[in-house]
Length: 286
Ligand SMILES: [Fe+2]
Image (cartoon, rainbow, N blue to C red; front, side):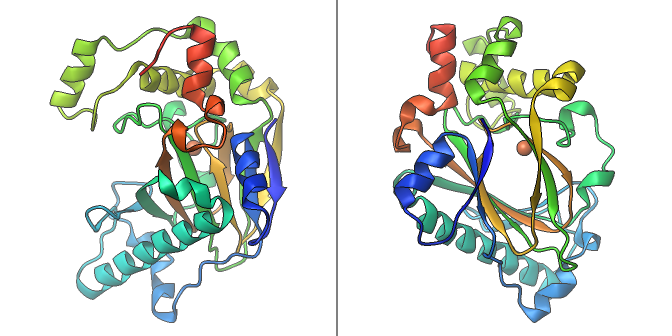
């Protein structure tokens, strides 16, 4: 069952790590990301380039995407999101330090847009309950662990819903509709054509289908047990978004940092979605 576990920095990391792996959202109420005075003008959807819904920063390349800024303002925005990447890493170090041995720090994002007013196709609509899967970035069985921080300057909470089904129960319900895929040649072609960065494995194909099947199933959306969660301004939260059913309903101005973690880096690797799906399907998905 998905649940919110209120925690503080200094709580037993083994307990928090186990809770994350059991599907908890770890809520740290009083962990604001301190913005600097010259960054306040960046907390505004006007910084968007108009093409994407997030501003994203890749720590591997130092590149910032999604903004229509130039010169000094661009540098300032890049420095802000890069600083958030460091902030999120420190937070993870405090909550689940064991993960940093194997976790790969991927993109950090800034989300200044209002979530509740977006008009999107159901597949892209994150107001529908879903587990995360990245079409262009196969993670090949690695976990998606995300750190979020609400920096809304007016003190507005971010409104989510969490599904109460655990990943195994959710996957079991949709299992009969899962198609095997992709053939090795098709996966190689997608990689060669740069449709995917890296090879899309049978695991990635299964997760993308679970993401879509869940969002497109109106009966599931309306009847699956779920709870409303309000994530206050000034709070941070950490959750495995590849296994916890979640929907972002409303809110504006949040930061996010994605980590990818191999199942072997978990305290209980058998709780990784790849291991659960392999068990349910009785075949390897690597
Ligand atoms: Fe998501």
